[in-house]
Image (cartoon, rainbow, N blue to C red; front, side, top):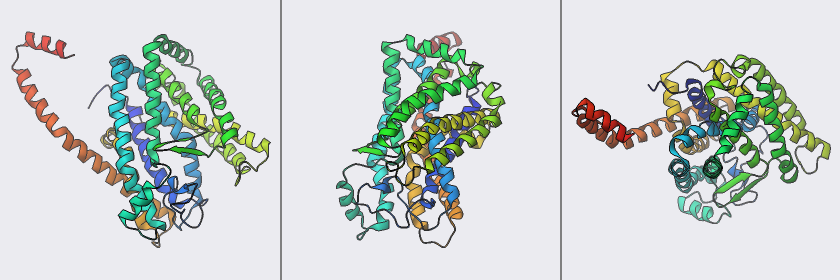
Amino acid sequence: MNSNVNVPFSNLRAVVILIVVAFHSALPYLASQPAQPFAFDAAPYRWIAFPIIDQQRWFGFDLFCAWQDISLMPLMFFLAGLFAPASLGRKGAIRYLADRWWRIGLPFVLAVAILSPLAYYASYRLTAVDPSLSAFWQHWRELPMWPSGPQWFLWQVFVLGALASALYGFAPHWGEALSRWAGRLSERPLLFFAWLVGMSALAYIPLAMIFTPWAWSNVGPISFQYSRPLHYLVYFFAGFAIGAYGCDRSLLRVDGPVARYWLAWLAGAVICMGAWGGLTSLTLPDWNASPLVDRLAAAAAFPFASAAGVMAYLGMGLRLLRARDRLLDSLSANAYGIYLVHYVFVLWVGYALVGEPLNAVFKMIIVSSAALLLSWTTVAGARAIIGMPFRRAGKARARRYSAIPVTARSLTRYDEG
């Protein structure tokens, strides 16, 4: 095992992918959804967000999914930014951007082109007159967009990484300024929280008031929620600032204030989430028809709930996920691949359970467990197969390397570094 791994954040990555799979597995069973599935050919194409609709419902899943929508997504952008400075410093701007293309850009293209239609075919079959694959492909090509599903996260992370790379290349001192700012907050988590809330409010509230908090844009495979791109930018660069300063000496160190007061952050997150949920309920079912004061209050509550949720996740990770575990190590190592493929399994297992006489909780457990296991084994198996030739080449290289005299071997190591 690599001793340089940041164990709490590695474990947190594993927990995040568990929650992502659970989130998508719970969507068919939301009490707030209509009785029947959404028609595949009818605008506004809500099946993109809710591809499977089951008759079994539980309101607890509405609360769970609302929490994750508010907290988990900014946390994922925060974690993406957290490790970007080290990678940029090690590789430089050009190489970092090239690496982002191979690691994020190209997988996004392949996942959207292949995995998205494969996953959404299950949704199509719920309402199709002709459920054949050829009929689905005809309907799919006639859509005014190319639905990407959860892969929308990838293109936004890629764009933010490209922005960070450009700033690193053309304005190299900006990273140092962010690092100094993070250093000044290393013992002041409440000030950091206030900064997150303030910047997020500036980024989110105007767009939410103009476009509503729920509206999405879909142009080809590019989709985004109108109210949130700048909100996610705030979290990406907040993570970048802490990463530039160093996690081991920032407010996110394992013995730091966020870890010590994780219970307080969790309580704050519950309170802020409840306030946001109560205020948002006043704007339903029609945001635009609700009073202006209610819309402003709901929009203003969102940054508090989001920031508190992120701080709670970070605190729990730093305090409760310190121990190394082989299962979590494997899940963390395969998390990105699981993210890419899990939606196919979630939708098809959910589709298979439609109409089965099981309650919503039991169905969700089956879907999430099956999707996680199938995704995990698929990705781990693919990595093992792809890595075989590299491992063989590495062993051969190691045999040649061991035959080199010690003095020459040290020169070889220097040249390779």
